[in-house]
Length: 319
Ligand code: SF4
Image 1: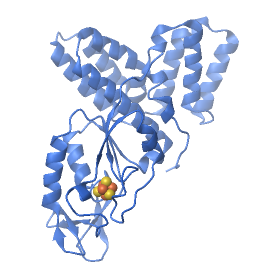
Image 2 (image 1 turned 45 degrees about the horizontal axis):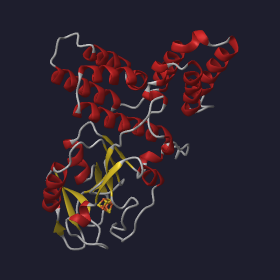
Image 3 (image 1 turned 90 degrees about the vertical axis):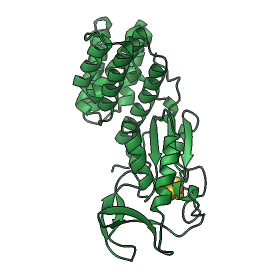
Image 4 (image 1 turned 30 degrees about the vertical axis):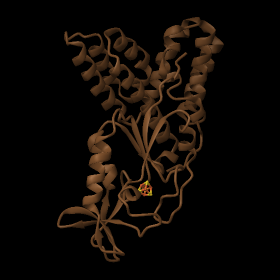
């Protein structure tokens, strides 16, 4: 059975359960981050406190000025953009091997999307939606890391895809750290069904790279493989692809199943298609076949347990 032994390296906004460092000296509890504390290596950041704005502090905001986005503290009139850019450069350059980020939504520093950008530091309407300055720098430096805000992760499907991505990137990082032809081939074999959920053509492309049909050096093979793998997982998995992956796994063991077992599985797939059972239920079924038939190949698929079970949670914001 697939086992998640590696811990992702995850950067998290510090106010999400680590320190009362928000502008109003509050901290926000976050259940997912609480559970991630035991199965990820977490590095926290609070760009605003770290550049010396103090806690509590007067809020800052993004302002569009002459086509450029700057960060202003309206109560003092201070432009703190340069301090923030300098912090980002130093902090982010110091990061290595980062697999993902969970950042505070809507923050002018941390928000990865949908952050209010004002037309001026005065009271007034927002000009547009943008990205927090720290989040922007992080995305530029780690374009294929798994990046989400804590608000979006309340959505069940977004959270599930994020966790799949995060732990897969951590395993990929282990492969890159100790590359070998056999390691790449094993990695690809054990991620086949998982990749199928995200992008089938890229899964096949990865297969061609792993079999080295182009006669590349090991370093080139791993580099190309990693690029395609990350690009594939950056997408949101489609339910039709997940169903395809379920059928694929089922195809490896279906010969040994009775007619009643086959009907049970096929009916369950249709219930999953109609959102009447969860993917976790389907994966349990596949795992029961692995146990029954001692099917090593199916059991090696990370798809069956893409992230630690302690992180599984059915709650859904519906948004
Ligand atoms: S959102 Fe970012 S900058 Fe604001 S308090 Fe949280 S960690 Fe600090």
